[in-house]
Length: 96
Figure 1 (cartoon, rainbow, N blue to C red):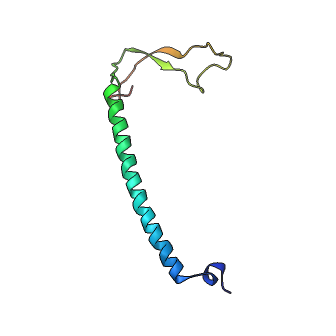
Figure 2: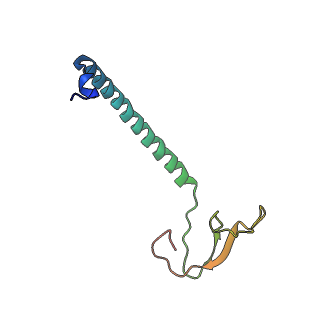
Figure 3: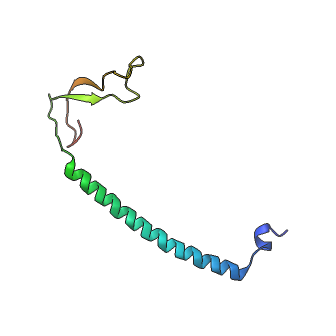
């Protein structure tokens, strides 16, 4: 039994559609290159502005309260930070 795809196949139309897909593929590749350049530019800007901090064992730090860690009865004016916590061990730079 012939399927819908085989019964409606047109060789000339198929080749035109394949050429169109190749043109769109080139545009997609150019868009990916532009997106990668934009991401690199944004990360370069962020890394220039961010202040890198390293913590040593014994330092006191605060942890930001997120939606999952805040108290159930905390209202709009609830605390934004919790802690202080003491740094016990530094496993690698930037983590504690």
